[in-house]
Length: 148
Image 1: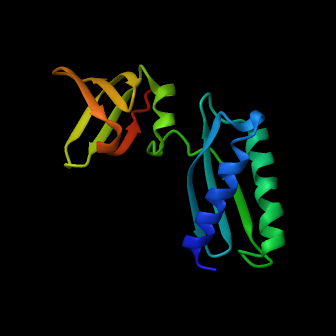
Image 2: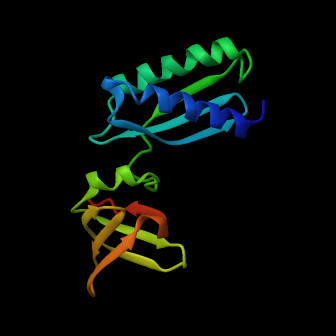
Image 3: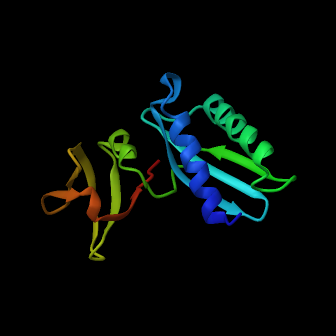
């Protein structure tokens, strides 16, 4: 099976997993496949615990073991994307209100500022010049500026 098809099937499995009451505050951010390694990145409305990653990994393993999508020998890693990774799912935006971010738009414009609000498919940012409303669909990439 091609990696693209495996990614699609993993996404479908996780859609079903994240509908459950105990897991409906979590969502898929991305899937990577390299050789015999599957990396799954998940996030939650209030973060992700090790326990959730562990249970999600076991859920996926049961299908991988049965279906042999990655063969007999594979490694699976389920984790949150990490602070240095771009935000990919609009659900990630809410928990970063008040933080500074770099945003790349679909017209290649770069916007830097503080996330002021997230509402109805719009990201409101306070830049050095003004307040700016950006539609989610115009965002190519957004990275939180990590400061210590």
